[in-house]
Image 1: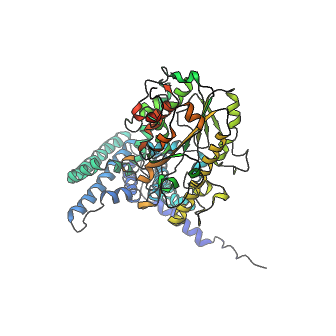
Image 2: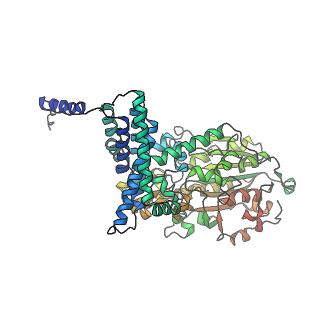
Image 3: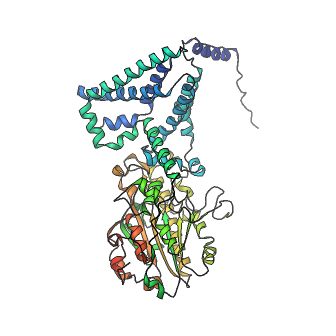
Length: 567
């Protein structure tokens, strides 16, 4: 037996309090659009830029007046510049809607900036725009909702309660011009006071600009939309026109089945075969694979790494516009007559398989591997027999794009049987877990990737009518709390090695090794070479003996180990 405590009813005192609060707001004098722009900009500087100001003033001696002058100058300068920008955008009709959107988006942005040390450059904004609903839902938490309430919803509600001053358009134009001019003069004057220190800081630490909020995501968003709109209106520039199979293909007796596994968020630091203190790759260790110990990624997020690794440009000649506007390695492979298919358990191929065969997996059709929202990576092996049958005995190149160890919900990336390292972090809100719990959960995900790759190799071993091979490489790494940084996506120039050092593993059947002339003993001698995702394009062309003007032998990790080096 229990009783419920009676719910307190709203009485006259509550109603009086509500009316008095509303009355107080109603009694406030009307606010000019210019004044509101200044207040909102000041609010952003005080609540949304702590990462920038912390980075900008790090290491300064606060007993020196110059340090206080520098801090005050950049605070005033940024507030004034953003005030001027707002004044250019706002008018009597657009003020409330625009400021509401800015307040809500900025509140969301700063939550993740503060929590995971996110830099809102163009790559990060593009990554966010390509995030699917399932992935985004894993990032929501009670703390996020509370943060949005305090820093987004409450100030937005206040703006809608305030009265805006109405003036004639002539007076509005005069006042607006004077305010903008004053704000710009104040901003310029403030920066000039500390120009030497400020310019040096921004020149030597260019990534710091991506912490100035909301300018960071607004400028990056404009760049992404402009670039993507331009690219959408143009067909891919061909790079496959001259490609053809090498002469050795004419004497080959078996068709080829090559599986390229593009991993997700697996870092070399926690890869057992790379010397990690835990054995997170027990199955691969017994399968005679070539494990490359010094592999680096092209980017720190999928939106950069995947297009980059399949391009002729790579990191060494990185040109985002050129990479996205040209065909990829997969188009060359398909052009020479090798059936090419992209099977995806993640968020798509990022343009590298446009116009080619693609398959996505319905999470509701396999209760053993799927939970209704996401599927374990083994789902990608379902239907492989059908893909082989479609080729009617022809050659097949399959890309398997893993969900892998995508965070922060690491606990959902492996089955219960792989829960070896405990205690685990069974939530997407990493702030509720210790770093060891996070690492344990992440390592269980790596253990599952090891199992998935071993199962893929086992499948290939059974395809005795084919020469089979598999290459695995992760798209980027992950930070697990080192230096207070979590997840991934930091600007490459300042990204920690945990985000750029990734595993790569190669396996080939005896038949593939013999028919394609790849010496296993020779390959074993090169597993400690320094390689990168830049090598993928050229190594695949070389290994598959595809002739192309884009092939660079010096970037082919198999070149010195093939019976014939000519491609």
